Image (cartoon, rainbow, N blue to C red; front, side, top):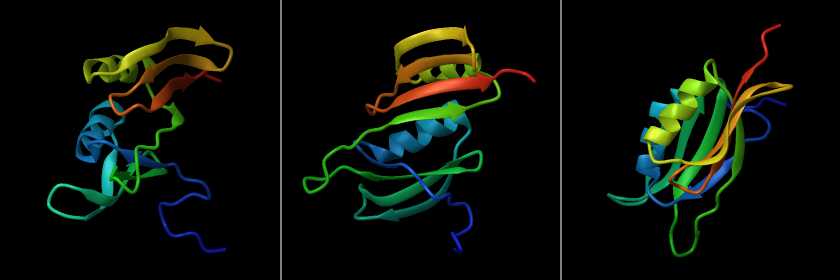
Length: 125
């Protein structure tokens, strides 16, 4: 099977209110880069894609036909405390405070778009 470059077998597809703001949020918090965007009209993203590291997240603006559809996402980052702080600075709310876990340093937030992120830095080996 030839999966297109920068895609993985399973990718989240989020339907969001204010997808443009989601691009900005993920860029500031996780260093995401926008890799694709098709507009439905001047204000509505019909299909967009960002990459966080080697992972693609697909998304679109919510419409009457396609209401918001959120997700729970687990993301590995280099510095979980810093990404967590940036997420809170960008309007997220706390689901779980940062703490040392058996699998690494981790905390949970709900972003301004309704998605839940578990931000984690793995244990050093």
